[in-house]
Image (cartoon, rainbow, N blue to C red; front, side, top):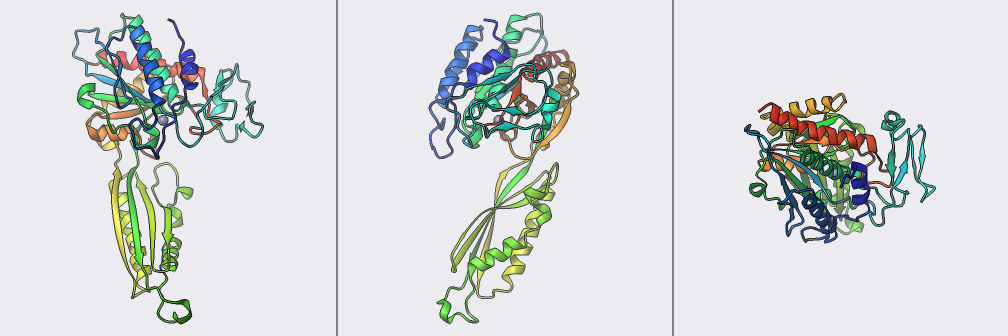
Length: 410
Ligand SMILES: [Zn+2]
């Protein structure tokens, strides 16, 4: 079996592995196990003899060390599910060979055009082979590009025993897209010291930072009264909620911020005259930034409430997740070696921050420090998703180099 990364990718994307946020089971959809079984079969066929799928839908496997050196055990991880945002049933991959530039019209739906103006990264793809869908489904390059790259790198390491490396663990997770990808992982069984999720976008990128995240719920108890007799008495909770939302700082909103700026974002509001609730999320890269945004929010709420003496409120903060940089900075070799591997694979490494969370941030805080490497996909979670063959091949080379560098430096 000498499958290329593209062969594998095309085989994996046609298997529907959409996860379901409303399901309580684990994995959230049974169909994810279909891909899990296939990956196990392929690993066993290449001689990775302990590969298995567990009852929660996780695939574990080990490529044994082939060196006498004491090399830390590293893990390559990607997720098998695709996002609930768009259908992943009956994916029909299309290949634009030797891309010459310009917008890409998808054949299955005239409305769907991958535009260069929305995808400036296409400008770096001239001459490459670009894989898209026909426009009626998502592609699932997030994260089947990661799976295909890890599997191809595994095959390469098994076939080339001359490349010295330590023990390498493979971990394929279900339900990442519904935020539960780390829920049932058995880190003791995995037995890795450091890990990389292969789930980022542009080739050459490595991310060691995520947002720190809290949720805030504000509940307002107003003074309800028949509107015909309300003068000087009614304190309408709906109106109070509106006043609070109106005073949220516009310069710290998701729609006005980028890069390393945080925000306060109202995600939901429900209410009646008597009682209203505002749900918000607060995001920042630093703990101080998070705290100061929450303090600002509380000042706004108290200030608005001061005009309504008969009303009361509660202000509740829920911790969601934290910036993984705090953990990764204690192990600088994780990112340093990845940057070197990217260089050896012929790219200029770019270190970035994720304006969101990843399973890697959860794994980092569970005791497995984990950075996020590029997988090469773009326009995730949409029918306009695409990835190039050449970027996936760069991903494979990066993983192979990374395995080699960990051994060299030990
Ligand atoms: Zn992903």
